[in-house]
Amino acid sequence: MTELMPSRELHRYAQESIALRLRSDAQAWPRFGRDVTLVDEDGPDGSLLFACRTDPSMSNPLGMVHGGVTASLVDTCMGVTCSAQCGRAATPTVSMTVNYVRPVPLNSELRVRASTVRVGCSTGHMSAEVFPAGSPERILASATGVYAIRR
Image (cartoon, rainbow, N blue to C red; front, side, top):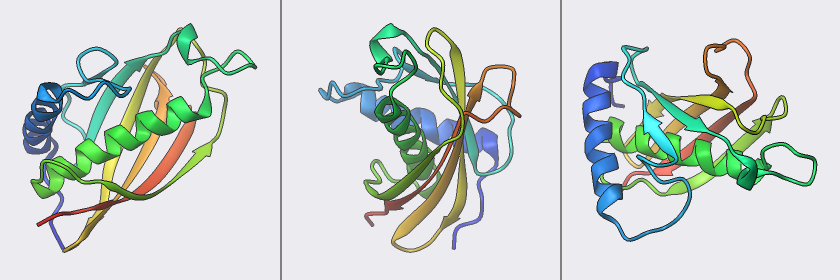
């Protein structure tokens, strides 16, 4: 099992992982630097904080952020956190569960806290919480995910 990396060190490795993604031709949402940014903060060991702004293109028929958009957001943030924690360029998703606690509003600034639960030899277990910027106690969605570590 890997020890949880201090957030500053994890942040540095995450920047390297994000730089690799930026060099890719993939056009999938979310894209770093445009849709999602890594927030510079000294948070809990094994965790990273990301920022995202929602807009009307993310709407479902009820006028809130579509659940698939939220799922893609937490998957990407947990994947980058896992990649940084275990020092791998890519950690594909094995499984993921998303819990939608409250509607995610359009035209709002969000934060995603992605945290390392455990990293073993072949998988990394992550968790994430989505909340409005400035209100970390108001959880909008939470997720857990398992990511493959390719050695």
